[in-house]
Image (cartoon, rainbow, N blue to C red; front, side, top):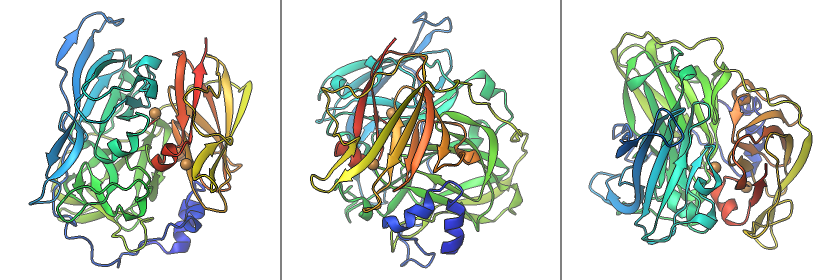
Length: 479
Ligand code: C2O
Ligand code: CU
Ligand code: CU
């Protein structure tokens, strides 16, 4: 276990964690009260890859397109042996995966069999406004809607979730999330671990009652002490002594993770929200905030068969068990994979000619979370970016007094961080991002150039409680 000082030093690499400590985030110790009975009791589930229900020709692509049916509905699952948990899921599956290929669009026919509205959003997707899940387009109970995802963008790990106006936080909490893994020729040509050695790991927290039911309290983020990985509570995963690629996504409403493998063993950070980093970055700890994706390669060949290696969260709330999951090295295996010394250069989006600033803060008088002093208003357009024009966004979190972190997520386009608290981003944050966290009193600058779809899109803090309380704006992207 790192000492608090080492931890703060480690976090100082990105500037986030040093500020997290006074934010009311206690550091969990390894001796936290006996962990829950469910510690390493169940195997990791490998999420199901959905199959297209049909394939079409044309659709704007020579390669044709794939059609999926997704039904959002309530179903019962067993999370803890002997109990049933009512969840809201896509096709009755925990974190199902859609695998897509660049140049081959995906069409989704979505049916809402929930008794609450639903508005499907592909987080990280370059999609037309009509398929972006704007709350104007939410599907009422019993309704349906067709979504078109062009897949004309770089390979990356995206995820799908609700964006309906009032139900999104609870829908996500109750399980409605899916992985969307886009590949392309460039990425497929790299010798990274593939196939069964390329594993999505969805991290989130939750609170369960004794009978196994999910407890949802909008402000209950400090009581969600059960950590689920691909829907299983603190599971173990039997691995071969070779390299694996893990696609981490944090689908928690509010929780951040600062992950440490074993005693601070090396993880190789290879990708973030928008896909591969320019170069791999060695990481002894890895932060992942709500809605972010971070991909790592772990080489288990350095552990003898029989080893058990624990992945921990170093920033749990007081009294929580820090364990997230355990890797059990059970066999040897051939390993033709390797991590190249360079991965993928960022696109050159030029020098910004438009500047915008965003101040994010909590208003204690109203309990609202605001951007530039304003609460979300579906009838107000906050900005009108032009396609093809490079902009510089400065995002400042002024919540020093309350110590509240915020994040900024842009729909439609990824951005490149140019400065975090006055310095260039750390290597792990130097790739394409779509969500960045800004700690209290801190500032992040990034450049962004919208390139494809005109129309109405959102930008917001991805801490769900803040989003619920107004921390969102709209941009009308114009030709
Ligand atoms: Cu995960 Cu508005 O997005
Ligand atoms: Cu999004
Ligand atoms: Cu926020």
